[in-house]
Image (cartoon, rainbow, N blue to C red):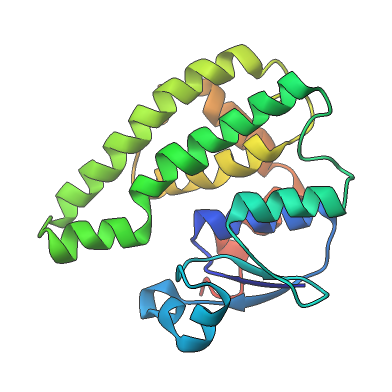
Length: 212
């Protein structure tokens, strides 16, 4: 498999974690978002949205959108499972994952932050305040939810799930933008537990080939 991504992209980070948890060998092909490589004609043929990641499967299929890719991997490689068997628990994991991937992350992507500065004229301080506001707003609700569901080491139970796969990259980016995580002890505890696992540690942006 081939994974097209950018080392700091939360979405690409999620897919790296999922691939690592499944023990799947894959080749990384960097797409430098800062240099605009996502707008190259060849890349747009694979993903007209000009977003990362793209996963090219071993049969040549092209998949986009990180959550869709993670669920594809879970269906094709069932063990270890990223979603619980119980329908209620499965829904809870999806809700936690979507709270990050659909509510917090879209407001803080590179293209949104660039629009704030390049088009609306926001300065770096305003950009940082925007980022911090939406992360803190989302983390407050997530912390409350996790305080109820995180009865084990991770977001739900004692095995990492799709929820953890989404949480860890968001925590990484929150720390990059100096978000104070002291108010979110459950989030911090879960992220620390995940990052102690090799599949998460090996997916960290600092360990990617395009991070230098």
